[in-house]
Image (tube, rainbow, N blue to C red; front, side):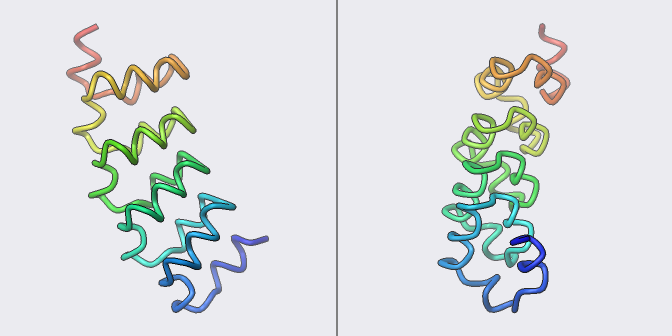
Length: 117
């Protein structure tokens, strides 16, 4: 129900950091409706992925390459590794953290890392 409201919410609410923090703490996928600027805001994205790891898909490209953000996402949902930057999908320790949660996470690893079994 909250997601439906957010989809039609006034842009000013979707651009307010305080408002979006409240929403992503309840439902990380609310990040989908955030303004472009807030999709690049470290605090907002961090709270979103802590609540729903796969909300990483809505983050800015810059934050998909942020190790702290991606690590938090992977801890919540191993599948979020698939939304991480190519650079971080080649990070052996990050991939290992995801694989420890679920072995299938290895399919999201960089091809060079997968070849180095």
